[in-house]
Length: 453
Image (tube, rainbow, N blue to C red; front, side):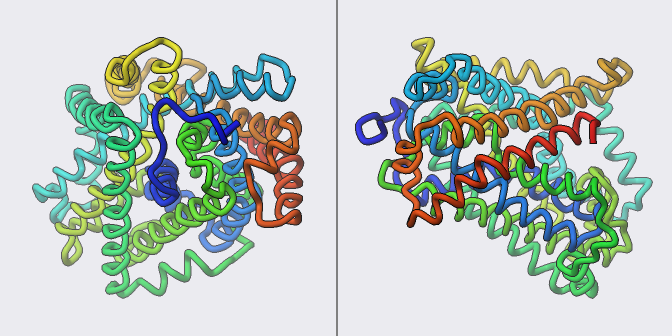
C-alpha cells in the first residue's frame, strides 16, 4: 500500500527530519519535568534501570507498531484504522482506536498548554530576577500567587496555544519540520549547557551516583509499575501523534532502525535532564523526592541562590518551553489531519477550529487552580480528571490495542514488508514482544492506575 499511496499533507524531507519530529513529540515536559521527580521519588539508580528495560521491551515495539500503522495507511489515525481493519478483514469497530488516539491528544494538549504556559511565565520571572535570594517560603508565594490568577494563566496559555497553531498551520515541511529542526538542536544545546554547569558544582558526583548507582532496596513494586508507565507515556504512544507522523514517513526509511534512534535519543534527554538537575538539587541542600513541585517550587530556590543562577534559570525554563512546544505541535496534528481529510477544510481552517476548541477546553484546567478549585468530579478537579482520563486510561488502552492489532490482526506479510527488519530473527523478536510482552505489561500498568494492583 505504501509503495503507491502518499499522504495528502506531504512527507518528511528525510529520515533525519522524521527522527527530529518524533523525538520532539516524545521529548516534552515528561522528560524534563516528570522524569527527574519520579526518579527522585523512587530511589534513583534502580528505578532508572527498570525504566530503561521497559523502554527497550515495551516502548520500542509499540512505537514501531504505531509508526507502521500510520505509514501503511498514509492517513490520519481514524482513517488509518478504518483502512487497515478493512484490509485485514477485521471488525470495523477498530476505527474507535483511531478516535481515542485523536481525542487523547486533543484533551492532553488542553491542559498541557496551561502547564507549558507556566514554564513560559517562569522564563520572564527568571529574567526579571524574581527568584534572586528567595527562600522556599518566598518561592511558594510566587507560585501560589501565579496559579491563583486566572487572568495570568489565561494569558500564558493563550500565548503558548498561538505559538503552537502558527507552527502547525504551515504544514508538514514548512511548519512542523522547520520548527523541529530549530527546536530540537536548540534543546540539546541548552541541555548540554545545563549539564556543563552541573559538572562545576560540588555535588555533581553525588547527583550522578544517585542517578546511576542502583539500590534495589529502595525500589518498590509501585516504583516498577511507575517506571513501566513512564516508559510508555514518554514516547507519546497511544495518542495518535506517532501514527500521524508515521503517515508522513517516506517509504524507503527503515521503521525499526529509526524508532531505535528516536527512543534512544528520548532516553538520553531524560538522563541528561537528571544529570543536570540532581547535582543542583543536592548542591542546594534540597530534597530530590520533592515531587511535581521540583521544577516550579524547588529549582527556583537553587537558581535564586547559586552563582550564575540568573542565567541558568532563564536557560532552564527556555529549554522547558522548547521541549513543550516540540510536543504540542504533535498533539494537535492528528485532529488537524482528520479535519482536512474528512471535512474538506483547508489546513488553516482545520488549525483554527482545533486550536480554538483546545484553547477553550484549557479554561477548565486554568480554573481548576483558582475559582473552581473546590469543584470536584469523582473527587478530582477538572485538571486532575483530564490527566487521569488521558494518561491513566486512554493511553494504556490505546497502546494495548495497537499492540494487539499489529501483532494479531494485521497480516504477517504486511508487517514484514512495512517494518523491513534486518533479519528474520529480529522480526521474530518483535513479534514476541508485540504479541505477548508489551500487551501484558501495558495491561499491568492499566490495572495499577485504576487501583486493582
